[in-house]
Length: 257
Image (cartoon, rainbow, N blue to C red; front, side, top):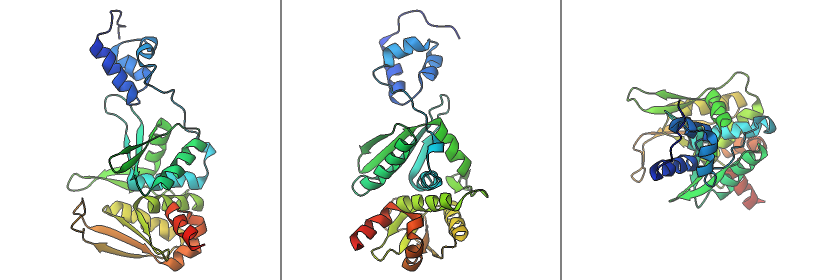
């Protein structure tokens, strides 16, 4: 592609800045406009951050599993259609989940990866731009379409997954889609039958007993789909609590101690 030599228009400069703010790499922006990276950097240097690599090898099996579990419940990714983006977002409750956002931040910090945390209405967004993370998530989570052409996440349980990794997945799911009662009985709700199947598979592998049911949506629910419910009795939670190590469980444990 030919390199532009003429002066850039204000519109082109604004578009470069906008793409840089969205996390698009300098190389991809340069390719889009037919510019060299030096020219792009000159205009975007105050709006882009140097991308850091996520070092997954620095994380424990539990921490890697936790990221997968949380993504399964409240995560989304944007790889971009025309221009690669590799953006992963985790959505939390802005009022209640400050401690959970802190755990996610600590995990990424341990992996030497820059992370953005910012409020959006009643939601707290944890945003990570990382090709390594996107690629890793896609080895564990697959998107499938149902008969109504709706896209659902499916947990791809690997035969080589360690028990520690699976405990991490379960802890992440609990912190995203779970509710821990005062006596530590834990309920996980999902509208996805595929996620429901994945949770049951993890519980079976870990030897954790649970009850299941299907409930209708409530009047105030955003989604009117049925809820697939997994309930882990308090006796089972207490037996495996140290291995699950969920933030929501820790909240209750601190109150009881």
